[in-house]
Image (cartoon, rainbow, N blue to C red; front, side, top):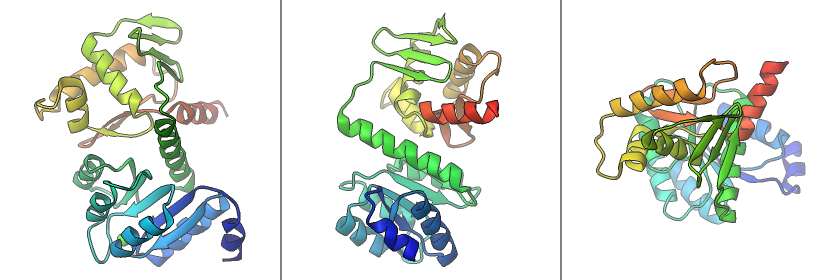
Length: 251
Ligand code: CA
């Protein structure tokens, strides 16, 4: 607790931990404070909503299994007015819940049990994405590991070589890059690429993702660029996430 009090004076980002299990809460609190975050804790959904309004956190870690209301209800309650990114914490094997959470506006999710480095990486990505959104920076080009994407020119380079993508492949890549570092659900991708009346058939997506992978990661010579979550969606690594992985691979 002393450690926590000392850290409260530091202007680290404020994280609201919504978690009913005391052991998980204690673990999260210790880990985050040690990493320079400030923390507040809500043990149930009702407190989560009132504390989010009271403290205006920079990020919310939301357990889906709460004693009073479903975590998804808390998310739906927060989303209309709370600008903080929300990372959902779910139990293993609940793909359906992950999809619902992402579709309801969660920025990312993490599955129990998880390691602190993974959690911190997800938090950094979520905070960076929000900072970028607030700055209103419309990025016209982006580099992720070996990939360079020029959005206006609609050109993609992989390891310095220009790669020809079809218009649909480019739209799909652009949609993933716009949310780099997080999983985008099948429904979101179908709507962004094929329009709001797109079919719910994720078979299309699988085909185009296979094309993208083949064209952009031909030799699998570098750490994983694309993320696939079966039954949930797809993602592309965030730039700094990729740097970290490349660093790990080099050690
Ligand atoms: Ca719980």
